[in-house]
Length: 84
Image 1: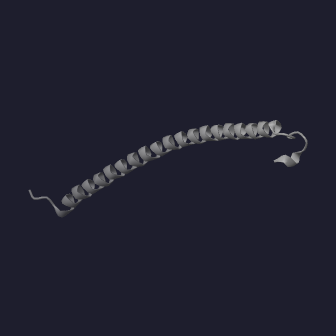
Image 2 (image 1 turned 90 degrees about the vertical axis):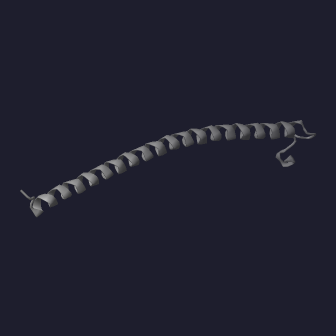
Image 3 (image 1 turned 60 degrees about the horizontal axis):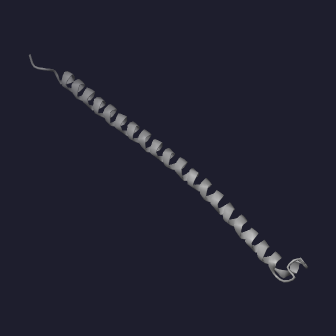
């Protein structure tokens, strides 16, 4: 017995829906993995920025201390604030 036109179209429609569902699933998984990787990279960058800020503050303190020691050790260094 031959298949009717409607039966063939129904199978084709189901195949199309299944293909759309599979592609949608792949897109969602890819987006999830991308966002997860970006979040991991952001955390690493934040840690690096915090470390750099700490090191920069230590360098600033060392520079300020060195300038003060040079100023205090210079002749007439403690005579006033105009010797900078």
